[in-house]
Amino acid sequence: MVQASSPSLSGPRAGALRREGPAAAWITAFEGPLRTAFDGPLSGLRFAVKDNIDVAGVPTTAACPGFAYRPDHHATVVQKLLDAGAACLGKTNLDQFACGLNGTRSPYGEVPNAINPAYVSGGSSSGSAYAVATGQVDFALGTDTAGSGRVPAGLNNIVGLKPSKGLISAQGVVPAAQSVDCVSIFAPTVVLAVRVLQVAMGHDMKDPYSRALKLANRPLPFAFRFGVPDRLTFFGDSLAQAAFDESVQRLRDLGGTPVTIDYTPLAQAAALLYESALVAERYAAVRSFFDGREQDVMEPVRGIIGGGCGHSAADYCEAQTQLRALGQVADAMWERIDVLVVPTAPTHYTIAQMLADPVALNRNLGAYTNFVNLLDYAALSVPATMRRDGLPFGITLIGPCASDLQLADLGQRFHHATGLPVGATGQPLPAPEAIPGLAPEPTVQVAVVGAHLSGMPLNSQLTERGARLLRTTQTAPDYRFYALPGTTPPKPGLVRVPAGTGGAVALEIWEMPACHYGSFVALIPQPLGIGTLKLADGGTVQGFLCEALATEGAQDITALGGWRAYMAQRAAAPVQP
Image (cartoon, rainbow, N blue to C red; front, side):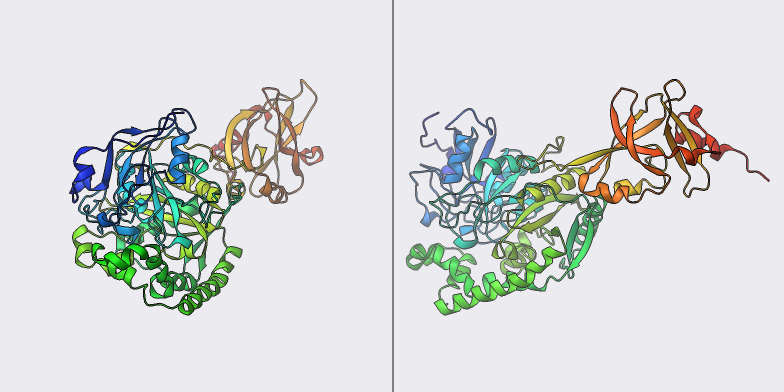
């Protein structure tokens, strides 16, 4: 173990206030990496910390210089990451007091978009997202109250993991609205975000909202149902709408079935965050500072926090009851869907546009984010596509509390199906990996020899059940192969015969989730069935066999070696007059 000490702070980024362009991503950069351990599950990885999260000996500003204080101890999550071998490179810019979704509300400067610097980065975790998207760090911590860990990910072509509330300790984090605050993770890939989550999560008695959650550890069904809101707005951005439509089709291609859900209760819950007495929690978070130094807070953050001052306790209780009533209505959707899919952000804005209309345009960016923490859901933002104008578009997968690993599994499948590069680096995505903590789904291998082969008429009975082709091989030379008469579509029959009287037959071995195997077998008509096949390499596998009686009078096609050869011969045969 390396003794912790206060890191040395670098030149202009440690002292100067406002900065421009890429430099605006950092509030404090260290002259050398901060480490407390060199071994561990995150050894060799570099990370950044949003500057509303404590790093011992380094000012925590929350992007408000007058609020700054120098903590004696690391936030719990920072300490865990350091102890796991990760190295901290510094602290990143944010919308002041984590109040915003656009990345321009900071006296330290507007953080640009990593893909196109004329556009906003998204916020409030703007600097953390930029540092990951540009490859300056391997991962970064953000926070997420109303979308701050998701919107910057979607706008910068990276992954944003918003864990279930209480899964990661918020001890040592400047609260925004403490009952719904989450520490979030930015990473180039889903699997790295989950690796960080595995280290960071855990109950912490020092955090009043920390919970000991047992995460669902089985993947979503291969044939999953995904909810799509019945009303979607993109604020006139046709490219964003086209990108979302493309994402829905990609989810279909991955085995999903779209289900339209009523977005009304979700939208109504989202509105409560700022349009009801719930906004009083924003004020409560910094009341001791705000009451005496209100002028140190920049607009429009000052107006938002100040808007929480005039509500009574009764108003707050009424708003909480209204929220819970909406939650009861909204939660009914989980009976019909496995996951909810929304645009991470409905559009892009330039920095100039945002500065000209900071309240309305910021609100637009949160069209699909505010309700998630209020209703106790988990969420994962993943890159979806690059629009025709070169700007990134992301989707967010949302699930019930503790569905974090399930979302990660589907999110990784989706992300890797896009073929997108990593962030703004131009580097290709690394190969997908197993999601840590997620138990593999039980599967069954089945050999097919005829109409279920890839490209054949009944192959969809396999693919619609999430089956995947493992390999092509042959049976042992102990079988006779027949073209069964009168079958539609044409089907063969495979029969085991005494040694020395048969031949080898080409086959494909597919793997499908065990939960779907029964429904697949139920589709098999007589005289076919499932039995144990002996393979050319001496192994065995479950596969199609035929009753011997049904082959009387059938054409013996064993010499052709397989069904594809027979069908090719049949197609080439001249048509009989």
